[in-house]
Amino acid sequence: MKRILLVNPPIFDFSAYDFWLKPYGVLRVGGYLRNRVELRLFDFLDRFHSSLSGQPGLRTDSWGCGKFPATEVDKPPVLVETRRKFRRYGLPPEVFAEFLRTQPSFDIALIQTSMTYWYPGVSEVLDTLRWISPATRTVLGGVYATICPQHAATLGANFVASGSELAPLWEYLDLQPDLGQPPFWEGYSNLQVGVVKLSDGCPFRCTYCSVPSLYPCFTARPLNEGVESTRLVARLGASNMVFYDDALLFRPHKILIPYLRSIQKQNLRLNFHTPNALNARFMTPELAQILVETGFQQLYLGFESSSAQWQKTTGGKVYPRELERAVDLLVKAGAKRNQLHCYLIVGHPRGCLQDLENSMRFANSVGLRIMLSEFSPIPGTPDGELCRQWIDLDEPLLHNKTVFTRTFLGERPLQDLKDLCKELNGKLS
Ligand code: SF4
Image 1 (cartoon, rainbow, N blue to C red):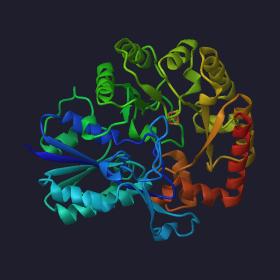
Image 2: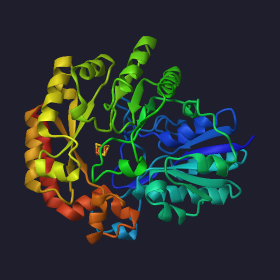
Image 3: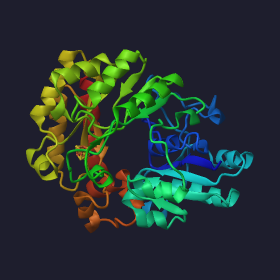
Image 4: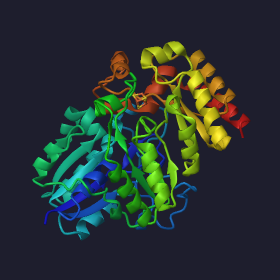
């Protein structure tokens, strides 16, 4: 039997927090190969790894989130002008090296990639594998491998699986998947958080978003796949389930509602979370009711801006009155005000500071806690391509949200917005 290693690399960034980060793509691929190969998982971002037990400062909150272990490292030369500390987040490289030395060698390592600007972590994994396990063939897949395939090819992996179509990967591995299997959650020795994705893609085409490039159209996944994955996560003892859907509330009678009804029937004791924004436009009294009833904890609504002009030019995903209506429906269904949040985009190249301030005051007036999300220029998206006039978009390190927002807005105006955000959120406490 082939031996396959699944790896989730460490992160190199100015900040990182475990807001339910799981390498869902590679776990899903691993699951499809269950019983056909020998599988192992090494997740650098596993905060419950045995090597970290008792480490101070790594507390986990009630919903399974918390800080990663981190070490300050030198900034890559293109980032030296950003006046923030740069860190490596995740298990130390020696723990991975020791793991490889104590295992029989692997035939193949499947490496998850995420944010384009996190590629130094992928490079580190490839270097360690080349050094300790040179016979292991390496494969990259995921967001960075899809958005920047040419750059990913320069890192020296044996194969780059770009896009969401998996047939080329099975051909490269010379293996037939069992598509009825749930993700490889048993790869974790202490699983606290699981992930489910009921659909791929989004019906919108927002000009700043990578989802349309990753998934050309919206498709529902088989209901049974989500239910089986959730049952496995609950059986392994996790109490938090996180949706990675980009349009969770779209076509609810075909997708989300049947899934939640099935979970309710099985009486699985799970808290549900939606770190990806929910689209307020799709909220209905029935949806609001079932979200509250089934134990959705913190609800994050995508808003970005109250400016009608900005919404119109970027895809028109939601307008202020729709946001207000969604909040109303959720509150009537029994959601607590302190559970309701909205994302506003900051540093967008077509945004203006006054509009952002107005948007923040509007969100606050309807009772939403504001989360500022810093804009990241993504190649291939209209707004990312617009940024070529300011940055070298072919260098993924410059897609970093911390870097672009500061370059575009300046440190002082950004700090003023953060102070205003704190003040407004404080009024809701
Ligand atoms: S609605 Fe959200 S997920 Fe869909 S394209 Fe717009 S930003 Fe992306």
